Length: 279
Image (cartoon, rainbow, N blue to C red; front, top):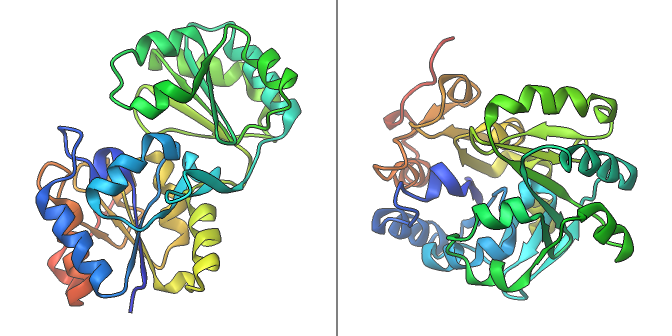
């Protein structure tokens, strides 16, 4: 029996309207009533996720920052951190500071961002994010001055610029891991740190074997989760190359794909889902 279901947020649990559907809430409730832990596994911080977890009725423990930390939403803090190499952080931020990108450093429980991202996020509907953010034009200097370790760096901007940015970051390639949660961003973590390692650490805390875990997601930063869990399920809105990494494909996030997948898991009828494409 599967004992833990990990859910990505954007493009997965959240619909196109940015909310959790009634069908998805009902499926999460059914799973938890059956004794299954239903946790978030997201690139967001806990500050950006606690209201969604509450809306969905998820378990209070979660994997956040793309696997860079594990948080307890009851305590409103991170329990464990998987930080990047400090020299790599300074080097990466030095390169990004010369680009026209919005940048956010997840520094433990702190959220440190540059003015470009702050302007892009002016309409971001997350009050606790805005209350706790620190905006500075010298992110590297601020982090160093306050002795803050960084679990993840997020950069947002024109995707046409990303190949050149990654080329400039190549000297740090052995000390960082690149992924993305969408077409317009880059996510940078420590090597060997991703949602899969985060779920493994959380499952260990809960005494759950990885064979008894399910992961549902839709994007590049879910690849580590798909490789680690016992049962990987892709969303119908995921790209074919992402779907091909999974055992099954559910519906899209506009048509309660998460609910469909959870019910299939609980009912033991996974063949009601679709097989992955053959690439």
